[in-house]
Amino acid sequence: MTDTETLSKLRGVISKLARELNATATDEGLTPTQASVLGLITFRGPLGLTELAQLEGLNPTMLSRVVGRLTELELIQRDPNPDDLRAVRVEATDAGRQLHERVKLLRTEALGACLDQLPDASARTIIDALPALDELAQMLRTRR
Image 1: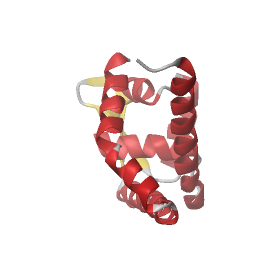
Image 2 (image 1 turned 135 degrees about the vertical axis):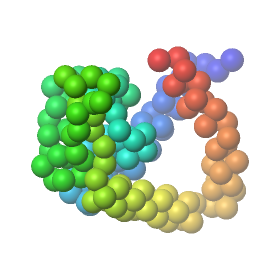
Image 3 (image 1 turned 180 degrees about the vertical axis):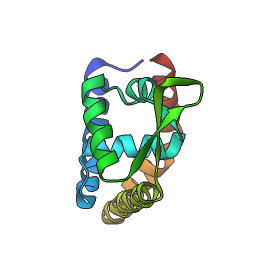
C-alpha cells in the first residue's frame, strides 16, 4: 500500500519524536532509558524483571544497571515476588510516581508549545491523525 521510502520517512519521524520527547527527562536528572523504565513501572504496577526487560526491550545487564540506579535514587523499590520468592518485583515509590508525573507534564508542555508554533492546518492534521497513529502503535505491539 505504501512505498518503502515513505515508510522509512514515517519510521524516521517517529524515531525523532521519541528521541526529542525522551530528552525532556534529562531535565529531571534521568537518562531517557531510566525515565522510560520508571514510566513503565509506574504505569503497569509491580513488574518482574524478566517481564520488564521484555517490555522495555533491554538486555538483563542494562536493565540491572537501570533498576539499580532507580533504586539508589529511591524512585522504585524491589520487593520479593510472592509467587516466586527467588524473584523480585519492582514498583514505583511515591517519589518515583511524582517524578514520572513531572516528566509527563514536561513532555506535554513541550508538545503543546511546539504545536502552538505550527500553522493551524499542520497542527490540526497531526491531531486528526492521532486515532490512526494509536491504531498503528497497537498493531506494532501485537506483532512483537
